[in-house]
Structure formats: structure tokens, C-alpha cells
Amino acid sequence: METMRRSPLMQALAWCVLALLVLPAFIVIPISLTPNRYLSLPTDGISLQHWESLLTNPIWREGIWLSLFIALTSTGLAVAAGTLCSIGCWRLGSGATKVVRAAMIVPLMVPTIAYALGLYRLYVEFRLVGSTIGVVMAHTVTALPYVALTVTAALANLDPRLEQAARGLGASTSQTLWRVILPNLKLGIASGAVFAFIHSWDELLIVIFVGGRNLFTLPRLMWDGINENLDPTIAAVASAMILITLVALLLDMAIRARRDANS
Image (tube, rainbow, N blue to C red; front, side):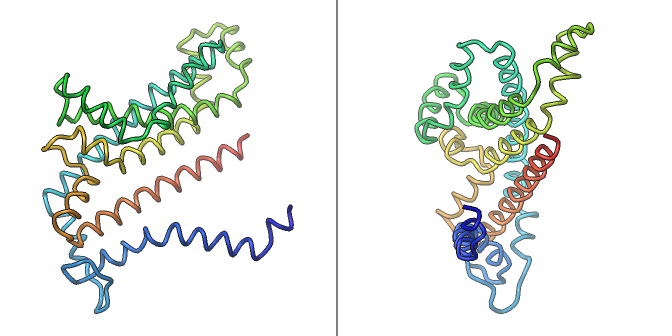
């Protein structure tokens, strides 16, 4: 098995598969540098005019800030709810907690289109269609499983005797939570936060259904731009989103490497 893993043929095959998955996405980066006013690879030099348009056009700027606000807010809410729920299930350890854990990952199992459609019908009743808070709540629910899974994995490596020792030394419940449990879960929480942010940052279907006519995040602006006008600025937006996602993934890899080194 070890020989098979280190086989040059297997390594070459792995790199080919990786290139097949990654290169089609990264092709938008050179397209964003084209001097032309249509989508094409730069053949007569490169230009930053479409990146400049991304940063100076008020529509794109508003989309950037809206996407950041929704992603950061929903990530914060998902981290708080997912972490506390996971800790509660860990402390109780009863059969009912299995049902709670299963319910927390349901958003990963339900197709996004089905969830968005049902959410739209619900939001119509509560007049939340077209509201920022409605999208934030929807993204919080769909981001919750990422936090729950990573925190639950971190809790599996946490010795319950640490909590017992803290309580035996006179620490209150809140002191045990903030000074013993959470510090030992910080890497798992950070990893879940990264994935929750990426999920909200790239999400489109929910925004299309419940965003109404006045709520335009970056993915929705790209969607509308592709349907109406193939402006190369869309390639610049896609490149920026890919780079931000890549930075987030590298951050998660660093967090996981540090967690493995500490375990």
C-alpha cells in the first residue's frame, strides 16, 4: 500500500485530477486582466481597468460591503449557536443529544433549492423577503452544520476531567466555559468559522429567492451580469472571490496543522 501511495504514476494522476478541478476556475484571473471590453484572454497586453471598475463602481462596492456584512454576521451567529449547542450536547451525553446533532446537520442534507423555496414561502408570511436580516438568518442556519461538525470533532479530543477539575476547584459554570472549555476548542471554532464564512460569501440560490429586488450580493450581481451583459468586470469579481476563498482555505489548513501539532 505504501509503494502504491508513492508511485510516480499515482502522483501524476492525482496532479492531473487536481488540475482538472482547479484550472477551469482560475482561468477567470487572466480574463480579468484583458484590455478588451468583452470576455477574452489578454493577447495584446494586460490591463487593470476591470479591477478599477470593480473598486470604483458604486454598484459593485455596495455588493462587496453587503456580502461582507452578511457573511460576517451570519458567521458570528452560526459560531455562537453551533458552539454552544455542541458543548451542550457534549455535556449532556444522553440519547436525545443524538437527535439534536442530527438536526444540526440537516441543512447539509436538504437540497439548497428546496430549502430556498420553502424559506421563501415562510418569509412571505413574515414579510422578510428582500430584507438583509432574512438573508442573514437563512445563511446562519445553513452555516450552522459546518461549525457544529468542527466543534464536535474538537470536543471528542477534550478530556471531560478538565471540566470536573475546574468545578472541583470552585470555578462556576461560566468560568469553566470561558477559561477551560472554549480555550481548548478555539482551533475547532476557528475552522468552523472559516467554512461558515466561505459558505455565506459564495451563496447564491437563497439570495435569489429571498433577496427580493433590492438586495444584491456579489454572487447575485455576477448572476445578473452574466444574464444581461458579459462585462469582463464579472471576471474580476470572480477572481476576487476565488482569492478570498483561497486565503480562507489556507487559513483553515494552517489552523488544522496547528491543531494536529498540538494533539
